[in-house]
Image 1 (cartoon, rainbow, N blue to C red):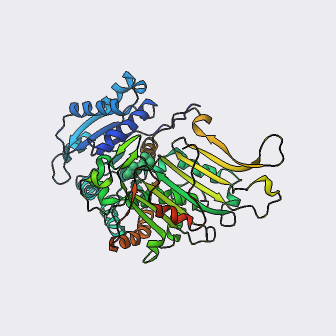
Image 2: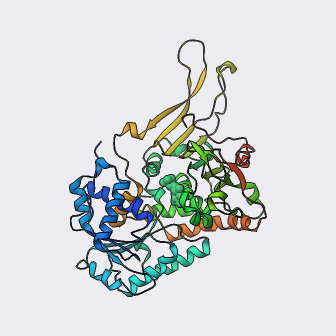
Image 3: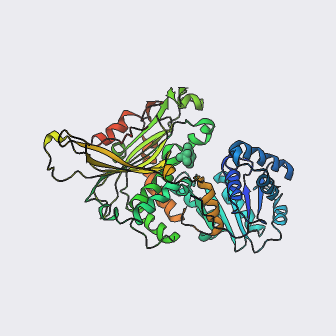
Length: 493
Ligand code: BG6
């Protein structure tokens, strides 16, 4: 299948933090891929900026090296490489000083009527100061947009302050808050599955669904990010954003359209309907863990504290939660969430387990009847599995088996899956905010997370230890098993 390319209007993109990790690993490769597909208009410019005193040529060399490291050799056609590198220029600017800003203004000339994207690939402490400089140097045109990414605060209060500082310069329709999970192909497929099929919506409620599990497991540890990670932990790093966004897409009411605010209004209602987890309930409804040395990724690995070089950290590298949505559709249906580092396999999936059949017409010899399950696999091997009961083929009487109707997207559509950043950057240029978080969504997600963080901070208990390469602390198994349910385990993993 050939991918369909929708051209975008002429734009200039300024990447602040252009010499950093995000730019190197994700942004430059994503932009290159879009150029390779012919989506970037010939005159569009990409301007890198950071405090480093790079010349244009040094930045071009840096970008070339990034592409060599992160884009497959077969895709690095010489003519596209040359065209892409030619778009690049560099301006050294410091958010705390006035140096560089006039030069940045010059490098954006002529181009007042072009779409102008400011991508802040920097720490959140610089979001406010950079926006302020953009404002004072009159770089913000009506066609300008700003892109930011988590951590969007460490709590509701700090997220609010961050939003305030940005909104002094940019209006809400100009602000694009990235959650890269929303750019993933299968996350959007979740919308297609729910709202482009008549089959699921009638049974998508507490009358037919027993519970929902959302798992995002990683085999990696914190690698070189221990400094950041130790100030965040799994709840802030994964649950407040990615996992709550997934939960919203599973649980929201059908929006009236896919217009950004139609979608975001529905997601916001779900966040507001989450039953608060506070006080004593925190110990019953949440489990936090921290990995110890063990075996993962095919070898022996260190524990979190050893990687961090400190033995006092209380930061969780694993979290499991039982959430409840208080509305008509979901009353009584638990949503179990779990995520962690150094788990046995890398998988992100949503598992919807339906209620058991009300009455069996079969003899006991037919075997047990397992409930239907819909498994939406976001990564790896994106696809959908619907577990059904069927008759075992052949003679021997009626024996029932639980088998998946299995659709792997890679097998079904022979098409390259674009990285989330490719889609998201092009959406910013198009002015489509549907896959970006609105301010009130981010703040509502924090409002649910804050009491859990507060209760953990106030508790003298440490995160429960788990051995690297296992599915987290045994308390996470107990969290779901005491409700008579089990975590879904795919035999293929
Ligand atoms: C990031 C987190 O947002 O998502 C990382 O900060 C995590 O800790 C990553 O590893 C997971 O993303 P993906 O796309 O690899 O599932």
